[in-house]
Length: 179
Image (cartoon, rainbow, N blue to C red; front, side):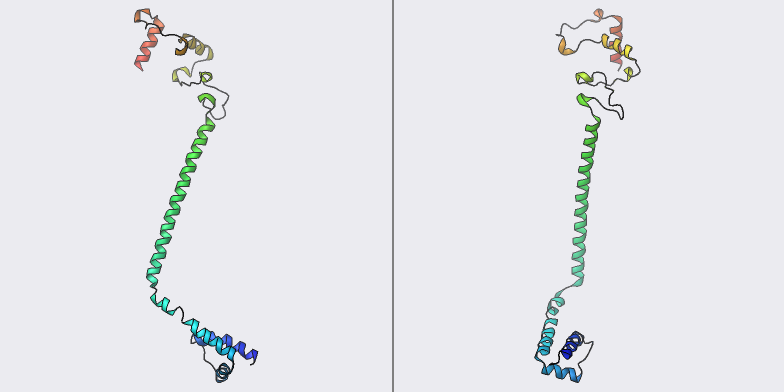
C-alpha cells in the first residue's frame, strides 16, 4: 500500500510487541490490508517467544556461580604460568651472570678488573688463599719456589720422615695441621 505508512507501522511494531504502545484504528486497518506488514508482524510475534522456554529454564544464580568459578580458575592458572616463566627467566639470568663473570679456565672476572688473573689460572686451577693476598710479587715468587713440583711431574717416592724435613718444612706441616 503506502510505503510511508508501512515504515511507520514497522517502526511501531517492537513497541506494541513489548506493550509500550498500541495500534490506532488506522494502523490496525493497514495491518489487516497490507500483506507485507502482516507478515512482518507475524514474524515478530513468533520470534519474540522463541527464547522464552530456554530463559525460563536458566537459573541466573547457577550461571553466575559457574562463570565466577571459571574466572577464578583461569586467573589461578595464569598466575602459575607467569610464575613458571618468571622462575625460568630468573634461572637463565643467573646462568648468564655466572657465565659472564667467569673467564677462561675457571678465572673469575671482578667487575672492571678482567685483566687480573688469579695465580695458577694458566694451569686451569684456582686456589684462593687469604694468607697470600697481602704478599707482593717477590714474596709470592719465594712461596712458589718453596712449593713442590706438581704431582703429575714427579714420580712418587717414599714418604719423608719428620727427621728429613728442614725447619721451614716442619713449620708448614704444623701450620697445615692447625687449620
